[in-house]
Image 1 (cartoon, rainbow, N blue to C red):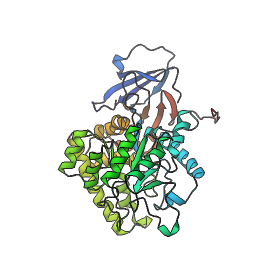
Image 2: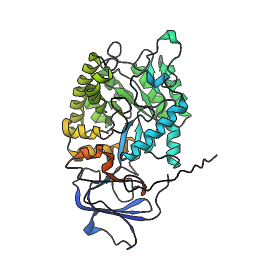
Image 3: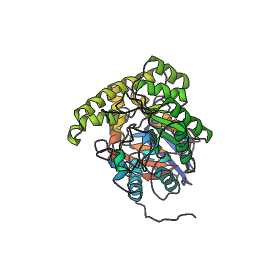
Image 4: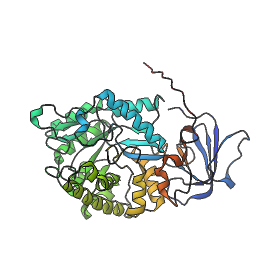
Length: 431
């Protein structure tokens, strides 16, 4: 991904640097060759040439680009889970995913960590984004997910004889688990996504208190993945599934919903980040009836929402790390609604705006493996920056409206927002 080769001064705004410290009311940001040269009070900024390119924040907010830490680029606002594995071929899924990446960037998300994808498309999305062929967030890719036979993501009955080839690897035992990871190694996947537990979406056989992988299978996944320099995460709602993931050495937990004292102690001791992804649950409760979700499913999502919110607040208050990512890509929780997760955590879970923003920037970058380059507005880091109309600390919900975003910069290059120039399309593919 190209970085800017000039100098830009962003001024006249409240500067939030993403570290959790208080905002600087008279903030400004100086960018040189795509990196941050200064972030602080306008009274302390170094001398800049008179002809420097300037962005006037208009009294709004200057902040780091957001990080979507549970991103499903290849989910296409599906109405039922079954749509994921049989509805569209890989060619069309790839096109839909590229549109979702463009939308995420326009919403202010300059980076993302995948929570699983169809057909290993993520790896190629990252290549296209990094080569500036398509706009999108800096992407830490996952691939096809791993689930035990009969688990949450294994829903096609045997008589259909079609398997789950596009979506997941179905494993039975440790050797299958190792084989699945090894199949991902060659494709350049960074994150191996697994399904240790069930979900409220499947109340009959794999609900949110059900285990869907054995510890031995999980341990085999982790040992194999770590041997090849890959990281492991998992859909963890049930308490024992969370503990199994922590014992096995998972690098992050998705959801971490039902945590008892033992699970919390294990999590904090290992300093494992959690991505609660609660807005999926909130949206399922709100919009479930209009999408025909059974009442048992809606009730399960409400229980998950309540348990997840309690766990998330406790994790934060006890010094743990949380990323923001709302599991978007379902009809009732569509792409483009990403910032609703931030509003929910601030207005209903009990996070302060600064805590939520830190989770969505600094911690998100840590989860994505990009903490040395992005996530905070600090000298030397890449200038992945948002300029937003209004005071985000006073009303974080303004991030939900793309119309409030003046500028989205990646490496100092203006990519999206009202100030972004219209771009002509040209394609050059190496090799």
